Image 1 (cartoon, chains in turn green, cyan):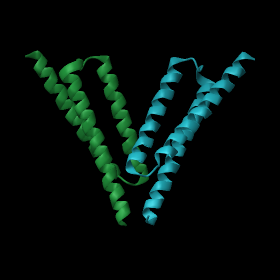
Image 2: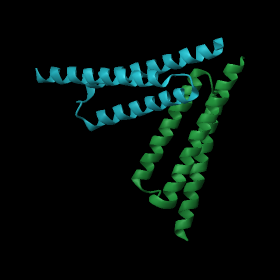
Image 3: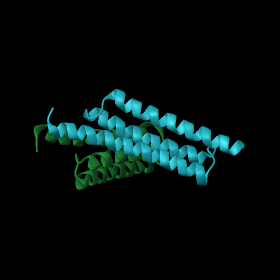
Image 4: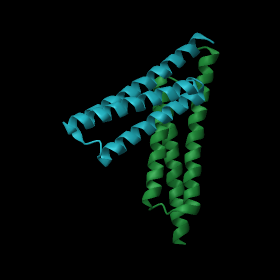
Length: 95
Length: 95
């Protein structure tokens, strides 16, 4: 493997991680300020962002820059984080 | 530039072109068989696919694998093709 290839692999994964973190922050802001988790707009924004990220991950996998299991793990981690955010937000509202 | 880097650039562009062609084919099939161009479902499918492709292109640009002008040109060409398809389909219906 050449240096160039290793750099692209690292950069691809770092970009995907950045985009996943952006989704967490976006949803965090939405939950804190804008809409209820039950709001259809919230679901739509989340679906759109998850779809966009999954297309990026799929593209990186097809390019051979990210391993399939790493791409799947990244999405799984993001889904767990979002589900924890959702739960925390629901609890806050019940209090 | 190493061989590895050149290969990733070529592969990235080829994948994006493949995905753009897939959208053209999908829309072609939709126009021939399923729904009118005025149908909201058609618009939604097209918007979703265009959004997915633009995220892939943006990701490739950020990775440094595709030049910004080439990515833009790919989307512009696709939009022209879709608009020609749309026009042809409308004319057929008027006859």
